[in-house]
Image 1 (cartoon, rainbow, N blue to C red):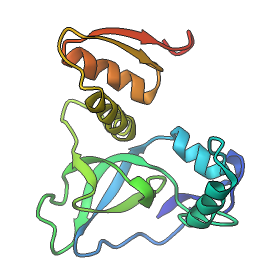
Image 2 (cartoon, helix red, strand yellow; image 1 turned 180 degrees about the vertical axis):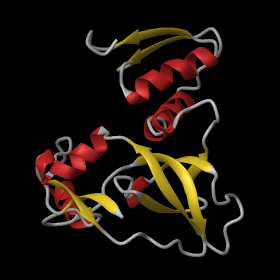
Image 3 (cartoon, rainbow, N blue to C red; image 1 turned 120 degrees about the vertical axis):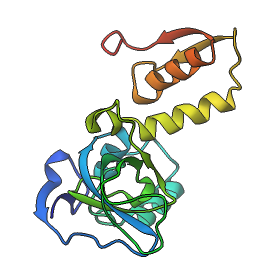
Length: 193
């Protein structure tokens, strides 16, 4: 299969299209034929190993965890949408042909034609009224927005200010707050709104 591979940290031109073996699902995994993926800030930060300013000790631990000279996980990508191509023997939630979308978490791997994920990973059936391109943009920002909105205990009638409303987290946070019948004020740079 073809994949976009990151052998070393650096600017976007360190990414290369290469032939790599197609993964084989373990007993509890599904093999997804990817139709769409995204490039999000986390992918760029990992590719360039440019994270927000952490203390030196934490940066060293991150380097050890993610890879010293280059990423341990050579195929980046944190969210995808596609179709189940095969299932492991123990999989019961999905069948071949099911349209799905997912967040890969630290497994990464969405920058490839195929990705294996455990059945109990952050993967679910894609809504029929969404394209794969649309669905692939939701998992990471959507989960983060949902987390922050739940932490804020947003209630009907409350006034909510969403700073960064033009980004992946903010656009979904606006919709979640509106769904809770909150009074929403959205703020971001003029180029995003």
